Length: 162
Ligand code: PNS
Image 1 (cartoon, rainbow, N blue to C red):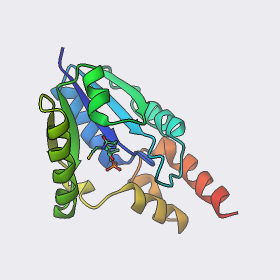
Image 2 (tube, helix red, strand yellow; image 1 turned 45 degrees about the vertical axis):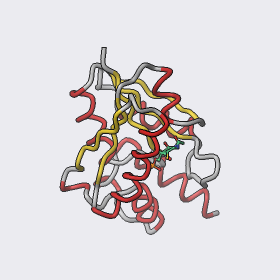
Image 3 (cartoon, protein in one colour; image 1 turned 90 degrees about the horizontal axis):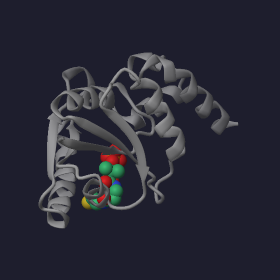
Image 4 (spheres, protein in one colour; image 1 turned 180 degrees about the vertical axis):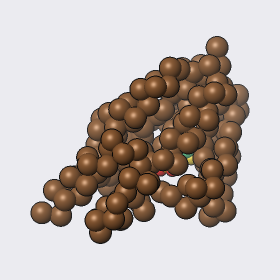
């Protein structure tokens, strides 16, 4: 049984994340999408809400679990006997940060590999931050995120602005 962890903030989950999650799900027996609480970062949605949004849009993936964690990703991965962390790599600008994280995780836990999937061309410049900014300016975000969560994002942004 080969398990991989797809860690991230997912604030909110985008079509780019979905692309990586789906592709990882065919490479491993089980994948766990791990939502980081990011206590030090401002987030639009709570970790529980971010999990719920992911759950809503991944119902058709049979070998997936969604969880949240506020410790080290490698500690969580170890506790689940996972063999890999799967991350998406977009433009070159992602590389330095991801490389640093992968090196640190390797140092902390040499038996767990970080695997990068190159983002599909359509999502090369897509990020949760861009989605939030577009929603703020009332741009149609259904091209960036799964349509069933568009309204949740718009509503949250509108309520935040009040
Ligand atoms: O979607 P993001 O914000 O790029 O995800 C970053 C995340 C959550 C994967 C990363 O910050 C993380 O793993 N945080 C948990 C703490 C940890 O394990 N840090 C060590 C990595 S250097």
